[in-house]
Structure formats: structure tokens, C-alpha cells
Length: 184
Image (cartoon, rainbow, N blue to C red; front, side, top):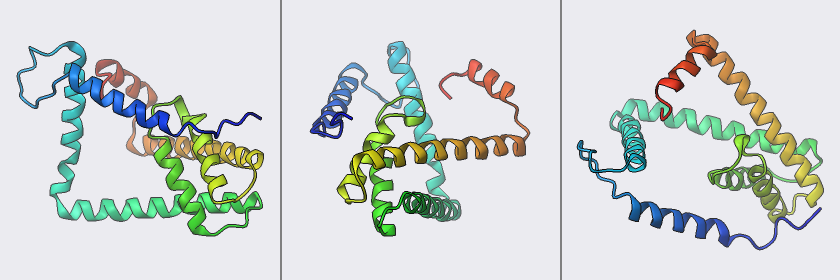
């Protein structure tokens, strides 16, 4: 197995700095309603930014924000335990705080653009963080990351399928909605 956890920490930072600089120069985003002067790509970027800002409207409603925060904390807590219990199954001698550290580093790592299911990037950051907490060796860490990634993908598919069924939405309806508006 090659040394793929080597010195590549600067690459993501340089990538995001370059991306931010380029998009700032190419597309001067403003929130005005007149978009006729913008190129097609800039219009799409501005539409995404406006959708993001609209999504933040929940912050104005205190009661909703409280329950969203509680739900988010419960999800993060349960995710931390999934990381921890999976590590125990692999024979790791570690505490819950080590598992939470691995979860946080991996979660931040998968924010970078990658392949569907975060295959590769998930493994890289999971193995890197496991080596930082001295939980195991590289080969076992890689096996752990693959098992954990597959488990999380299957869990998401199961929860998503149940949610679609609960809401009475078919995959065909999702596909047709995406074809009508691919940016949503």
C-alpha cells in the first residue's frame, strides 16, 4: 500500500483559495433582481446563493431553530457512537472522544468536492485521523474506513427510502422534478 497519507495538506487549502479568487473575479455576485448583465454561469451561481440565503430564513424563527439544533446534536451524538462502536468492533482501544475527533476530521474532509458517496476522500481523512489518535495501523484503518463508509451509505439509503415512502413521493416524481429544475 502506497503512502497516500503523506504531505498533501496544503493542496486543499491552495485549491479553495484559488477557487474563491477565480469565482470572485469571474462572477461579481450581487443580490439584485436584474440578472440580465450576468453570464449564464454567474446567473446559476447567484441562484444557488439566493437559495442558500433563503434556507437560512429558519434562523429568524427561534422555536424552529431550537428544535433543529436539538435534532442536529442528537444526530452528531449518534454518529459519534457509530464511529466508536465500529472502532470497538475492529479492536481499537480508544475512547469516545477519539471517535468524535475522527468523525469531525472525516466530516470536514468530505466537504471537499469528490466522487459520489465520498469514496476515496472519506477513506483518506478517516485513515489520517485514525493515525493521528494512534488507534491502529494503516491497513486496519483503511478497512475500518471502508466498512464505516459502506454502513453510512446503506443507512442513508434506508432512511431516505423510508422518508420518501412516508411522504408518498416516488423516485419517478423526484426524477421529473430534477429534469424540470436541475439546480434544486
